[in-house]
Structure formats: C-alpha cells, structure tokens
Picture (cartoon, rainbow, N blue to C red):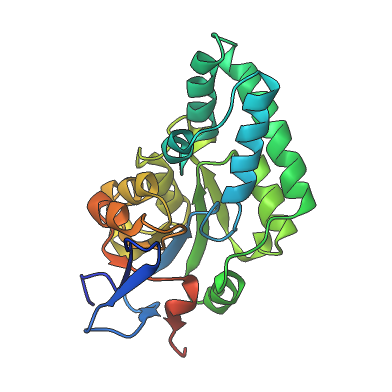
Length: 244
C-alpha cells in the first residue's frame, strides 16, 4: 500500500486549494489485511465541527468572552474536559465541571437538532457492516456520541463506541484506540483508524493502528502528515470496499 499521501491539500497564496495525488494508488481498498475499523466521529463521520464552534462561541459569550481562531485550533479533536479546563482558566477560574456541563447542554441541543453527515460516511459504514469489526473512537462523551450517531442513522452499524472523555484520557493519548481494539477483540496492527485532527492521528498512531487522515478544513493536511498519518484521502468517498 502506498505510504505517501493519496491526496494532500495545501492552501495556496490566493486562498485556493492545490491537490497533489499519490501516483501509486487511485483509492484506498478495504478490508484487505484489516479486521477492524475505528472511526473518529466529530469532523470525520459527522460535519459537526461547526456545531462545536458555535457551542464554544456561545459558551464564551455568555461569560463575556469570545472565541478566537487560536481557540478553534487548540480544541480541535480534543476531549470536552480539556476544553472546559482551558476555558475555566480564561473565565476567571470558574469550576471546570460547571463549564463542561454547560458545554454538554449546548452540544446536546445541537445534536438533537441534527448533525449532517460528511460525504461518503454513511455509504462507507454500511458497506463495511459484516465485513470487518466496526467501532467509533471519539473524544465526545459516550451518551452524547450515541445521541449524535443515532440521529444520523449510524449508531446500529457500530459494535462499540469508545470515548476518551469517559476513559479519562483524551486524544492524543492512545487509550481510546487501545480500548476500541480491545472491545473489538482485534490487535491494533490489524486495525485501521480514520481521523480528521492532528491529535486524533497522534493517538491512533501511538496505539499502533494504520492511520488515514481525512482533512476537514483547508491547510490541515500538513499537520496530519506531521502527526503521523500513514495515508491521506480527500473524503470517505475515496475508500473502496472490495467485493466479498
């Protein structure tokens, strides 16, 4: 398999995206040697990063502050507890647990309203059902993640949902991927992870999985490569499921 990025997107000076194609492969084919697939959720399966940005912006505005671009980068892919701790310091030492509860309530309302799927997500997941063990490895608390996946019509396709927040070890700690593999009874070397954030890529790579980066925003591709992604694709539509 090609160990270079299948497709890297780089921002050009005029703001457009330039794409560099790996000449060795046209698509990522599954399942091949893999026995389990672990998907990140926010920003990967679900186009929910704008929902998180909106929730965090509303949280800070309630307390007389505002969300910055730096905040967006720091919180990208991280556990809710970590974000709550950072915002607690910003907001004069408010109890992080209270910040976390407030942010959970804001996101619950948004998930109930519906989080859109990224292109190719539903089709890929359904095509893999029965072919490999399927799970979600997310930084979002389990109850909230299950709410979001149920609303998107995907929850029943997954055998397990592992949450770094519930495990007390958010990404880039590898615990959530190690736990996901344990629950799926699969050695990490026989598992593949799909991630959109650098912290998620680092977590999956440290756990020993083959890691596919799927950039969810312009300019993030180099960071995914630097974090240890084995392969980059433009979207989940670039994955082909071979015939049984």
